[in-house]
Structure formats: structure tokens, C-alpha cells
Image (cartoon, rainbow, N blue to C red; front, side, top):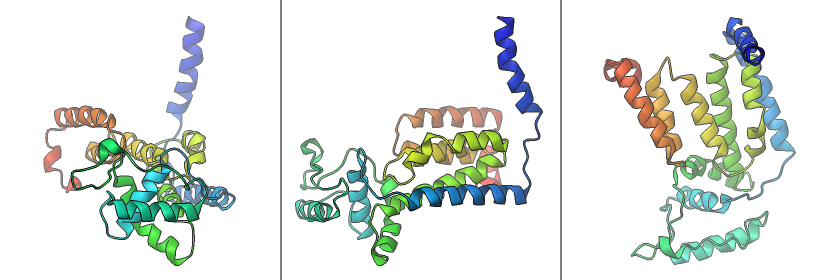
Length: 239
């Protein structure tokens, strides 16, 4: 048992003894290298649907045209025609959910529209450049991942940050799905948990829009923050 404990504690002591800070220039170099890695990965990929990607793209398209994230029967039929032209896994995907049809006949989707709203402005850019509309999610994913890395690498040793951000999450960067969204917001939330729990709550609240169970973590952080920092509501950094 002592041998097992020592094998666990020794690496922990090593990492806690390291200088966790990174110079501003070092952070920029690290961020640049990671951004180039993301660009190289995206450059060799092609847009394709996975999972519920058609629903997220559908809401983003409707929002980009200043419509509601729900669909009238006419809007839904028109969208399915457009998806047929896109191919890449979007053609023929069922977008009807009878139990989610409102009294006015508009079709809602099981997922919330917040993630799609982030991608909606980039659909305008994709349209102007004649790119696949799903590229809008790639831009959002890359932006969120780079932002999260910038926050985390200032508080975590670069080797740990590399292992965290250089893992399986990279597979999702060109997918219109919420994995990168959730990963990035949780990474920021936990990185800021001790110093700025209020911003952790903002990130956790945003993440919970697509993954409701995260709201439980939000509640725990909120209670602990106000217990340990009773003056948090008066902190100007949160305003």
C-alpha cells in the first residue's frame, strides 16, 4: 500500500514543485503553436455531420436569417431541401419531432439554441466565402478552445495543459456538436474557480444551456462562493 501511495504522491509532489507560471511571451508562443495545430487539422478535414449536428446547424441557419430557432412547416421543408444539396451527412436527416410541435405548428428541437446562436454570425461569413455552413461551428469551436487554453495555461503547467488540450477533444473541432463548447467552458470555469468564482459561474451557466446537469455544479459553486466570499456580489470585477 505504501508503494502505491508513493507512486501516486511522487508525481504530484513533482508537479506541485514546478513553477506553474508562464511568461506572457511564452503564453503567446504556446497559443500560436496550438492555433497552428488546429488550423492544420481543420485544413485536412471536410465538413460532415455527426450525431445531432443537423439540428444545431438548422437552428443556426434559421437564426442567421433572423428567424426563430423553431421552424414553421414551410421553413422546415425549405431547410430539408437545402440540406439535401449539402450532402455530407445532412441529406435525409429527420428533423421532425411530433412531441415537440407547438400549438402554432412550429417545430422545436430537443436541444437548446445557445450554441447555434454563437455560430449564426459565422454562417454569414461562410455564405459570403461560399463555404459549407457547418464551417461556422468550426470557427466557434476553435475560438472557444484557444480562449480556454489562454486561461488555463496561465494557471496550469504547460505540460498538463498540453495533455488536456491535445487529447481526444481535437477530434471534435470541425464538428457541429457541443463537445468543444462544453469542454472549453468547463476548463475555464475550473481554472478560475479559486480566483474568480463569479466567472466560473458564468461559464458553468452557459455550459448548462446545452448540458442541463451542469446546473448542479453551478449551484454548488455559487453556494460555496457566497459562503467563502460573502462580498462577492459587491466585487467590481464581476460588474
